[in-house]
Image (tube, rainbow, N blue to C red; front, side, top):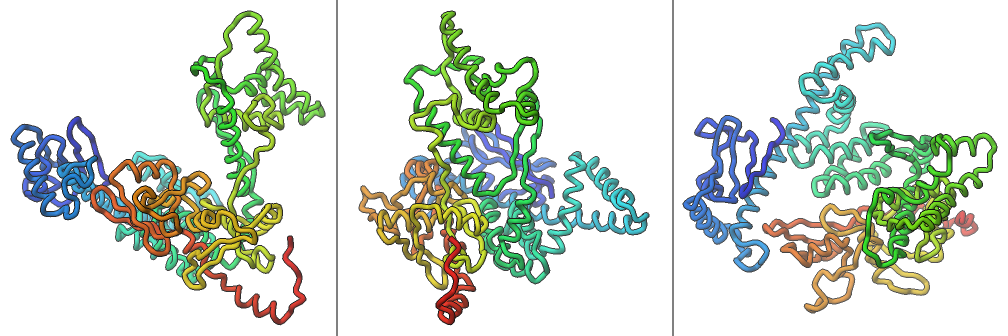
Length: 582
């Protein structure tokens, strides 16, 4: 089966992909009701590769479609009576339901084809392995059958040969080592993105028993969550069944940290650093805070973007501070040949003010800084790397005092050093226990999280001197935005009353949840509705009546530690045990 094809024409939505053979020789056959609904202007038309039903405009078709929409609304939409959602009328909701049904059917075909494609690639890889086994035992002869097959398939499919080589390498792992995941993909219960997330997180599991336990836990989650959430939880669950500790795996992965540059077109490059997760997100958060501080400090003038304002002053100053050679060469000489690097950085940061004074003396109007947030993040990042501090930028606060913010959850046993089970960086994933202990030791205060001994549900969060207990409880429970599939961390969200306070909603745990600004606005300004069930479960209802449940991630993250009872017994037997390592 081929992936879906689609095209959008003015006043109509038209979808094309092969489904069941039609009576008229086309590749798709619609029921009489669907044909009537699709006949009017703006309706849903369908056309197979060999011809088929196609929506057509016209006054008669439009009138018939309107009557049919009204009948469908009365017969099938149930509680979605006219006026219940003023942004969509009954006909529009009926068309949306038809679109949703077609998309679901098409997606199921795409998923089944993805599973079949993996089987075919696996069979091709087996042929290459058989040919390689008969060849000379050197790397070139062993690799050549794979390259040959990849070249043949890439020519037929008109895709990159390296893409085919990657599929030949990954398909056997999915088909043979993660058979439950492959079966779920073939049954269209998960997408290929879910399958890739599961396989990548479990690729280092040591034996088939561990992989089976891992799949038994993660596949049901993938069937109800988005690929992004599945990717996060897959890492957590894989760590639980892995024979190695997270500290061991993190140490091995950290040995591969480094930087690399990918040159792009138009004189630009991507600078990538592979670093521990907690520090990467702290760096991003600090850069964003600095960028917003710079924007807030701008004078209230009409923005004007000229050709000279497309790059930050610090970066431009660095270019102006050196002769014809590039900035990278100059910086390398300063650091590698014993030249005063701080003096070189100072020259970079002072060139821009001198040039600005010269322009002002000549009466040249200074271009107002109109850089966007991402531009400022890149410029401040460059200046921090080249000059050590953002000396060319002035914010409402001292930029050097801005610190990256992270929220970490760690079990008591890991905090006390009794095991090295990983901690969790909110909204991101696991981090090593040693880093979490160091951060906890430097924190001004901790939150104690009380969880249900069986389900792991957060029951309460407190401190010795309580303040804003409810907010802390909800931050730990939610971890991120609670709209379907969204993973914005809680410190970038709003705390929203599920039932509006103005309509009698109470300010309590069972009526509050974190929503990012985008989905907070969606809740209040669209036909989406939400109800909060016990345990913090949010039931979202779409404008077409579909109900989707969002389960708090904390019920997966905070399941009881199996070592807890063992440690308690050992502590009772040896009251003089060593104190925690912080």
